[in-house]
Image 1 (tube, rainbow, N blue to C red):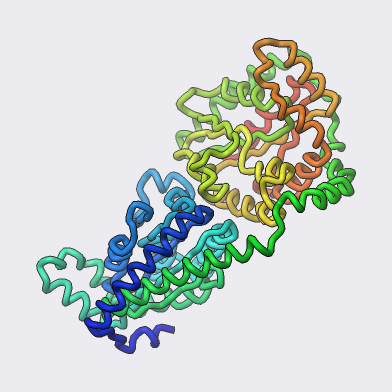
Image 2 (cartoon, one colour; image 1 turned 180 degrees about the vertical axis):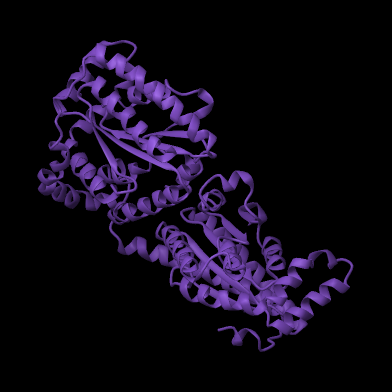
Length: 503
């Protein structure tokens, strides 16, 4: 695989000077076009052999382009804060917003390769880690991101010459460490891990480019031209797609017809719930007190073990999410939990993948995080209101399952609630809110408008539950016509799940 990057390519100095001037101008033009488009980021990953020029190339791109619109990130060993969260938390947080370029050194590829080379994982575990990378990059490119990946290569003899050359120069001696020489002695193992990694993760949406790194001038021109061409091509493809694809509004009638045809089936899961279930006030008070004590003890145990918990509350408007959340947090110390209310995304959030804002809110170990509405908005409100295209919300089921799988693999306890009420009960609660001064603020014109789309939302809920309720992360459907029953069921479910996790 790497033979073509070991043939000694060389660019004469005069030729380099002539080509550099034009290339720098074209790179700046491409960068400005990416900023003007403002709808996608460019993610550029550098990996490869020590001494092959990864850092120098990153510095050069910052010099040749406008560094104000470049996000440069170099990952080292995970910090304590990063280790307390799922592995990809730090990568998601570092993603550039739309219109900007992200340059990544020691990215999501580094740890899998190091773990494989040092024998910390076997072949199957290595393949699984690479599959996760493919899923991650597919998710980003599906959302419009441009991903470029450069493997900067040197043959073993060339790497030795490069390290010795750096050591001889007092100005660059600091760049060569004992670890670099250790890795040189393990060269064959690194290449043995790199080859399957490149084969498995070089896809049409996120290809690898192998760059011979011995001659800096050749390396610089090759990378610069590849970045320029990729940005130009990506923006042109986006422009062509806008011409071919119909606007979302034009698809709305067809989607409405489809929703109407299947609304009867969509109600199947929710219509099977027994909405007559109630709990008397005196019994509810006693039961809540008992479960509050149990939850407090369980959360203390979870905190001591570094076990995190995430609660997701979804449901109809006026279904009682806020009340259920308050009854849950009443059992906890304020330092043990955080409540994240999810509303329409901010400008900063819209400039990233829709999951970005949820990744950034993941807490450190031992804490409990409550999402009042969540990432499921993609397949609920964004689907029904046509804020997302059919392709976007349909692929979101797999993206959400992948996201939640990473939470579970990290050991996080994930509990998801859908609070269900009937149409008649919702209407009664809306009217009650209108008459109650301290509740009237909760009722908006949008709430009334959403009632007219009840069946479309019901279908979306049915699909959501069918496609994302897994054995490890099941949905808990809460019959919420009676608030006492709903609040008790929510806290009982949490105690059961948390008790199993800490037992």
